[in-house]
Length: 154
Image (cartoon, rainbow, N blue to C red; front, side, top):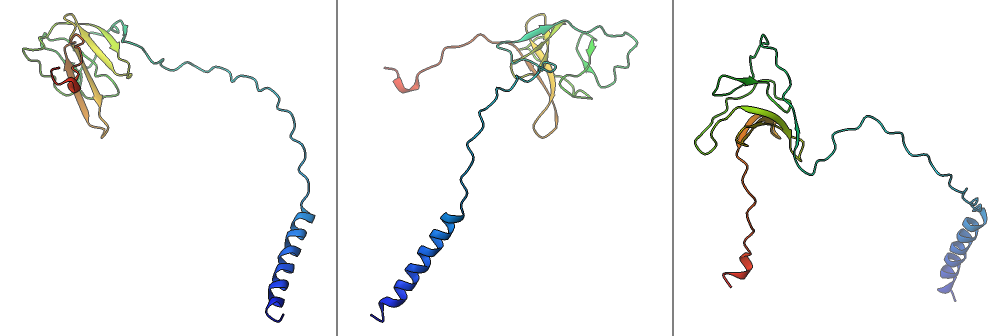
Protein backbone atom coordinates (compact mmCIF):
# COMPACT_ATOMS: atom_id res chain seq x y z
CA UNK A 1 0.00 0.00 0.00
CA UNK A 2 2.90 2.30 0.72
CA UNK A 3 4.06 1.91 -2.89
CA UNK A 4 0.73 2.82 -4.45
CA UNK A 5 0.29 6.06 -2.45
CA UNK A 6 2.71 8.17 -4.55
CA UNK A 7 1.08 6.86 -7.76
CA UNK A 8 -2.38 7.77 -6.48
CA UNK A 9 -1.20 11.25 -5.45
CA UNK A 10 0.36 11.84 -8.92
CA UNK A 11 -2.81 10.61 -10.67
CA UNK A 12 -4.99 12.88 -8.50
CA UNK A 13 -2.73 15.88 -9.27
CA UNK A 14 -2.87 15.17 -13.00
CA UNK A 15 -6.67 14.86 -12.87
CA UNK A 16 -6.90 18.16 -10.95
CA UNK A 17 -4.79 19.90 -13.62
CA UNK A 18 -6.98 18.55 -16.45
CA UNK A 19 -10.19 19.61 -14.64
CA UNK A 20 -8.75 23.09 -13.90
CA UNK A 21 -7.69 23.51 -17.54
CA UNK A 22 -11.05 22.44 -18.93
CA UNK A 23 -13.01 24.44 -16.30
CA UNK A 24 -11.32 27.74 -17.21
CA UNK A 25 -11.58 27.26 -20.95
CA UNK A 26 -14.14 29.64 -22.43
CA UNK A 27 -16.19 28.56 -25.41
CA UNK A 28 -15.14 30.16 -28.73
CA UNK A 29 -17.72 32.39 -30.39
CA UNK A 30 -19.20 31.13 -33.64
CA UNK A 31 -17.33 32.47 -36.68
CA UNK A 32 -18.96 35.36 -38.51
CA UNK A 33 -20.14 34.64 -42.03
CA UNK A 34 -17.58 35.71 -44.64
CA UNK A 35 -18.53 38.74 -46.69
CA UNK A 36 -17.53 38.55 -50.34
CA UNK A 37 -14.47 40.69 -50.95
CA UNK A 38 -14.49 43.01 -53.95
CA UNK A 39 -12.05 42.07 -56.69
CA UNK A 40 -8.83 44.08 -56.55
CA UNK A 41 -8.77 46.99 -58.98
CA UNK A 42 -6.59 46.46 -61.99
CA UNK A 43 -3.38 48.41 -62.04
CA UNK A 44 -1.26 49.22 -65.03
CA UNK A 45 -0.80 45.98 -66.96
CA UNK A 46 2.67 44.51 -66.95
CA UNK A 47 4.18 42.69 -69.88
CA UNK A 48 1.94 39.78 -70.72
CA UNK A 49 3.60 36.42 -71.11
CA UNK A 50 3.78 35.80 -74.81
CA UNK A 51 3.14 32.50 -76.51
CA UNK A 52 5.53 33.61 -79.23
CA UNK A 53 7.65 36.59 -80.15
CA UNK A 54 6.03 40.02 -79.99
CA UNK A 55 7.31 42.37 -82.72
CA UNK A 56 7.40 46.17 -82.68
CA UNK A 57 8.76 48.90 -84.91
CA UNK A 58 12.25 50.29 -84.49
CA UNK A 59 12.14 53.56 -82.54
CA UNK A 60 13.15 56.66 -84.49
CA UNK A 61 16.80 57.50 -83.89
CA UNK A 62 18.04 61.08 -83.94
CA UNK A 63 20.92 61.25 -86.43
CA UNK A 64 22.71 63.69 -84.09
CA UNK A 65 22.40 61.35 -81.05
CA UNK A 66 25.57 60.39 -79.17
CA UNK A 67 26.05 56.75 -80.15
CA UNK A 68 28.79 55.99 -77.66
CA UNK A 69 28.24 52.51 -76.22
CA UNK A 70 25.71 51.49 -78.89
CA UNK A 71 25.72 48.28 -80.92
CA UNK A 72 27.77 48.87 -84.09
CA UNK A 73 26.76 46.79 -87.10
CA UNK A 74 28.97 45.98 -90.14
CA UNK A 75 26.99 48.27 -92.48
CA UNK A 76 27.80 51.30 -90.30
CA UNK A 77 24.40 51.42 -88.61
CA UNK A 78 24.15 51.47 -84.83
CA UNK A 79 21.38 50.94 -82.29
CA UNK A 80 21.12 51.35 -78.53
CA UNK A 81 21.89 48.25 -76.45
CA UNK A 82 18.90 46.25 -75.22
CA UNK A 83 17.70 44.70 -71.96
CA UNK A 84 19.19 47.14 -69.45
CA UNK A 85 22.71 47.18 -70.93
CA UNK A 86 24.34 50.64 -70.84
CA UNK A 87 27.45 49.96 -72.98
CA UNK A 88 27.21 47.26 -75.62
CA UNK A 89 29.98 44.73 -76.23
CA UNK A 90 31.24 44.19 -79.77
CA UNK A 91 29.15 41.79 -81.85
CA UNK A 92 31.08 39.28 -83.96
CA UNK A 93 29.36 38.20 -87.16
CA UNK A 94 30.41 35.05 -88.97
CA UNK A 95 29.63 33.05 -92.14
CA UNK A 96 26.94 30.89 -90.55
CA UNK A 97 24.92 33.95 -89.55
CA UNK A 98 25.51 36.54 -92.29
CA UNK A 99 24.74 40.16 -91.48
CA UNK A 100 21.71 41.95 -92.91
CA UNK A 101 20.15 45.24 -91.79
CA UNK A 102 17.93 45.51 -88.70
CA UNK A 103 14.21 45.71 -89.51
CA UNK A 104 12.40 45.52 -86.14
CA UNK A 105 12.60 44.63 -82.44
CA UNK A 106 11.09 41.43 -81.03
CA UNK A 107 10.45 40.39 -77.43
CA UNK A 108 10.72 36.64 -76.92
CA UNK A 109 8.66 34.52 -74.52
CA UNK A 110 11.18 35.07 -71.70
CA UNK A 111 10.92 38.88 -72.00
CA UNK A 112 14.28 39.48 -73.73
CA UNK A 113 14.34 42.04 -76.57
CA UNK A 114 16.13 41.22 -79.85
CA UNK A 115 16.96 43.21 -82.98
CA UNK A 116 15.60 41.20 -85.92
CA UNK A 117 17.47 41.38 -89.23
CA UNK A 118 16.17 41.00 -92.80
CA UNK A 119 17.38 37.39 -93.04
CA UNK A 120 15.70 36.40 -89.75
CA UNK A 121 18.91 36.55 -87.70
CA UNK A 122 18.52 38.11 -84.26
CA UNK A 123 21.03 40.05 -82.18
CA UNK A 124 20.77 41.27 -78.59
CA UNK A 125 22.58 42.42 -75.49
CA UNK A 126 21.64 41.46 -71.94
CA UNK A 127 22.91 41.14 -68.39
CA UNK A 128 23.58 37.58 -67.26
CA UNK A 129 22.86 36.24 -63.75
CA UNK A 130 26.20 37.64 -62.49
CA UNK A 131 25.43 41.09 -63.93
CA UNK A 132 27.97 40.79 -66.75
CA UNK A 133 27.15 42.33 -70.12
CA UNK A 134 26.59 39.66 -72.77
CA UNK A 135 25.70 39.68 -76.45
CA UNK A 136 24.15 37.02 -78.62
CA UNK A 137 23.55 36.51 -82.33
CA UNK A 138 21.44 33.63 -83.58
CA UNK A 139 19.85 32.45 -86.78
CA UNK A 140 16.43 30.87 -86.36
CA UNK A 141 16.45 27.18 -87.05
CA UNK A 142 13.45 25.06 -88.01
CA UNK A 143 12.14 22.76 -85.33
CA UNK A 144 13.71 19.32 -85.54
CA UNK A 145 12.03 16.05 -84.55
CA UNK A 146 13.10 14.50 -81.25
CA UNK A 147 14.96 11.20 -81.45
CA UNK A 148 13.65 8.49 -79.15
CA UNK A 149 16.86 7.14 -77.63
CA UNK A 150 15.04 4.38 -75.77
CA UNK A 151 14.20 2.67 -79.08
CA UNK A 152 17.93 2.11 -79.90
CA UNK A 153 17.28 1.82 -83.60
CA UNK A 154 14.34 -0.55 -83.20
